[in-house]
Every structure is written in C-alpha cells, then in structure tokens.
Image (cartoon, rainbow, N blue to C red; front, side, top):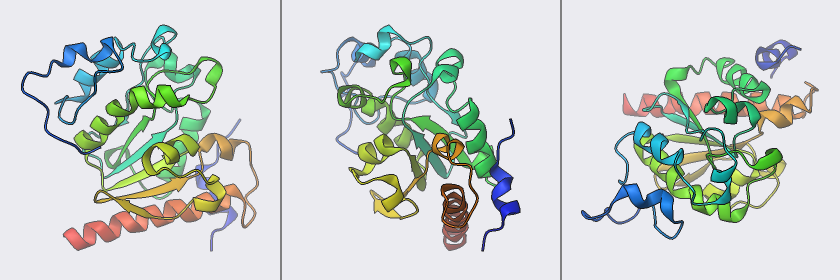
Length: 234
C-alpha cells in the first residue's frame, strides 16, 4: 500500500522491416516526406540529430529552434516516449527538461531507476507551435526517426506517456485512465501506458485512486518487471 510519503518521493516543489538498400542515400531523407526512413538508416543517434535539425518532412521544421532527439543511456533497458517538445525543450534541444521533465525524473528516482536505465524521447522531434497536439501528418513524417531510435536503443520496456504515444506505438484510442498500468507485448518488447507528468502536475491529490497514487503503483510495477527480466536473463 502506497503512503503519502512514498508518493511524495516524486513530488515537485514550487517498425521492423526490410534491410536498407545499399544505394540508399540518407542525405536525401529531410528533403521529402515521401522518402522513407528505413530500418538501419542510422548507425548513431548523433547522425539522426544532424538530420533532424535539417529536416523539413513536415511544417514543424519551419518553426523549430532545435530538434529534440533524446537523453539518457543509448543502451537503456527502458525507453520513455512522450508526445512532443515544449518551449524549454525547443530552446535546449533536450527532452523533458521543464517542470514535467523534472517530475518524470523524480518518478523514476522514486524506485531507483537511474539515467543508466532509461532513454527518453518524443513521438515528434520538433515543437508544435503553441504546444498544441501533434497532427497525424506530423507524427507520420517523424515516425521513422522514432522507430530508428527504438531499433538502436533496443529497450525491453517502453513507457508511453500521453495519448499520442499510445496511438502511435499501439494504436490505442482509449483514454489513458482506462489503459494505464497495463502491459502489452509487441515485437518482443513490453509496453505500458502511463500518465504524462504534466497531467500529474495538474492533479496534486495523493489520495488512493488519484493519478499520483496510480502512478506510484505503475512505476513500482515497471521496476518489478525490470528486475524480473534481469532475473530471468541472469
């Protein structure tokens, strides 16, 4: 049973596919959304970062300051996928660095999940103007980058924060409250939808059944699943 002190640990104050053809030229990728980003296009996240900062596969490239690629361990067992960068992320080029990101870090730390165990990224790599929701065409234009990140990091567990992460990776259209905390196995990986930290910032209650209380249950389940996986492979 979670206690208020435990939940306070994360309080804030104040696609697989065919092989890439040998003659495929990744330098062409940003030029046209019709040119696919195939599995194996990138060898490193730095290569992707260069392309994303030159990418105009959708209109978001016209308004970005920096493309936001990811942060954390490039061989992490857990990947956290958010929806899209906000203003702080656009300015720094680093995902989840605002208040929601600080809360996410506290949530992970509450069960002793360190930076060595997590890689954090977003469905779209450029900030939607005014922090609006990413549009379907923008998500589709950027999805190849996300799939390459999953391939390169090769996580065992993927946490989906927000409805667009759920929709992109699992096709889930239900509300987060109906599916959060549930495991889905796909392509040899385990997926779990969780509350977006920004939602938790708007819901401060720690009572049983509240979003923060439920998040505490979910992150403990994630930690337990990681330990289970490591125990099986040990």
